[in-house]
Image (tube, rainbow, N blue to C red; front, side):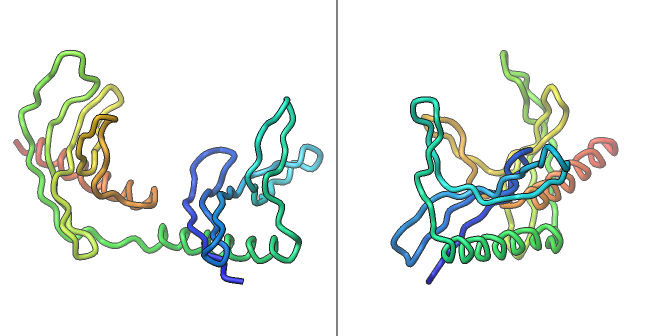
Length: 182
């Protein structure tokens, strides 16, 4: 059977990963790799959670694969999770960086203000329009965004948390260095 899996690692306490499974390019459904702690032994284990819903105070399964299919799905999900985890171990280098500090404006009621703009080059791709902001919890970055009626949306972004953190740390360290020199 052709099983395609899209998985994203999660940093939630109970969900290790979540995504979609597609069978034979015909049926698609969400799955989660959930963490479970045995109350008697204290041992942590994981299981794949399929779609459920609450009805009249009780939970009911909406999808129950037979045992053979369940094993195939578990194997495919497991392989995809390993692939996603490898991405965090082999992060590409940030080849180039350009930081342009700006005089911050303090708009009334704003929770954060822009204090710089950056560009980075990674994987041969130059990303312009990264904003450096300062808020109540300190400095942070936003990847390039556009605005729609329902809010801001990133145009480009790092998929994994490790790559997001690498770009953020790289940009913020260089920003701090430039500001100290000025």
